[in-house]
Length: 444
Image 1 (cartoon, one colour):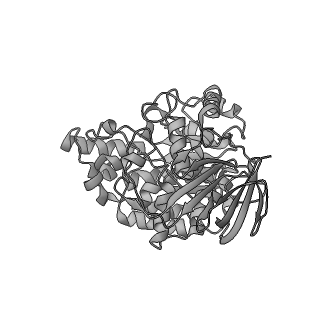
Image 2 (tube, helix red, strand yellow; image 1 turned 120 degrees about the horizontal axis):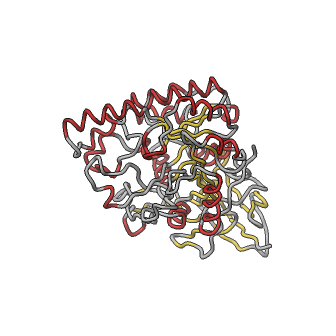
Image 3 (tube, helix red, strand yellow; image 1 turned 45 degrees about the vertical axis):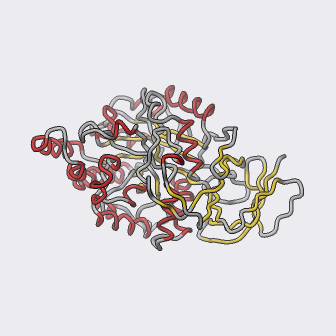
């Protein structure tokens, strides 16, 4: 068995920062101790660097199949490991959509052949596939995704009876995009009457408003309480929504949980003037006050997970008038550096970053033996140099779309190594030849 010995690590794990060596072999962490001696191991000395569990991103759009001019599993999983993200959960709004068990398994087969990172997928609920959903094994994939707002065209689920039946019919985590469709349509028509198709981008958070988010989120949470469903609210974007979640019980006991995304923690509506449609997301980036309240809820544990909603589009697609520019942007490579920047600013601790990006996604989705640095767990690790400034520019962007909303930004921390199942998959800008990602498994 080939072994790798990581020497002189500063480990960030389970609320602690401590020095240790880490011995890897057969895809797992064999030993975690201060002074490990293993004569036949490949030694990688990371003195002065911090080692996190590999990040688990519970919401990405890697665009395969059907939209591969924007990105694909190869390109975006490479970008992921360049950012210390070793596992991802991909969304169902591809072409064709992942709304049958057959299409779900086809995605798994494609990822098995091509993914640099560990992978799972969400099964898309629709107005007419309830019987298919009932046949889905609870350990088959990450969970069920419901679009309760028109973010993705015809995947909108707007039949109240069907929604309640879905909530009542599955033991899996139901992850929901919550925006009220009626409110959005009404707001959009009002601004179209005033501006036509070329609506100023600063109107986006007024169209996809805080009211639309809260109305949908509160309805979904009320239904989850009524049915006992396991609900996870994706990309919470407003301060008011944070009042819907609790922090008085451990995450493992919560039936209703919440996620916040990097862009809602980083940008505000003031940034539309400089970045325009590049930061057009659904739900919209909102006010600085909303951003501050999201941070408060993240730090006091009402919000459980930090993710990306990585959703690449081409530069040409994004640089259109408001009504034609698609929502979404690439983030998976820069999520951990962005959060580490907030550590440098004194906003969040290293331990809290590991909790929200590594531990909690594993707990929430009951991912088997990942998300922690523990003996016997899969050796998914991100090595970080906290004192290595670098500027985001087109030459170091790994996304297939070739751009980032962070271009021109200098981050103070750099991911230097990423291990996936014990293999050194990324080493100071170089990717390994092999693809070592595995299908995520679950403890349900």
